[in-house]
Image: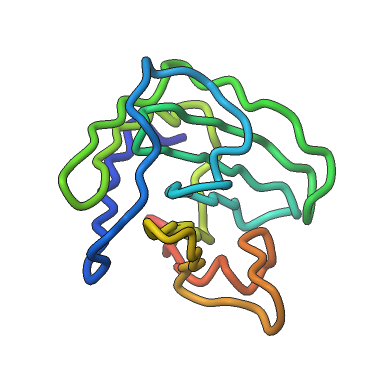
Length: 146
């Protein structure tokens, strides 16, 4: 079991970042179509994983998957994430209590510049088109607690 997770995403070196307009925090689909930050969380056993999207607009989404892009459904969190927009990214607090402790994590970002150019960021990418759901992206390993 885990409790609160604090994340900070900072975008450096982009002069003209396109940020979605600030809105009231709400669960919202398709946040990845513009600047968005994501957490992928996978336990050691099985193929199931979780995806959480965090937008600079303060909107968010959370999904559970049974396996690679299969069995997608809304993930109910104990509390809505708290997202604070900063001048160069976001800070977010998430209550992930009830989820199994991860051993594989991916922190990813879709960055859209003012001219519409998009880039896709992750610790690792599979070859070919960007695919944050691919197992190669889950490059951050969390060791077991003794």
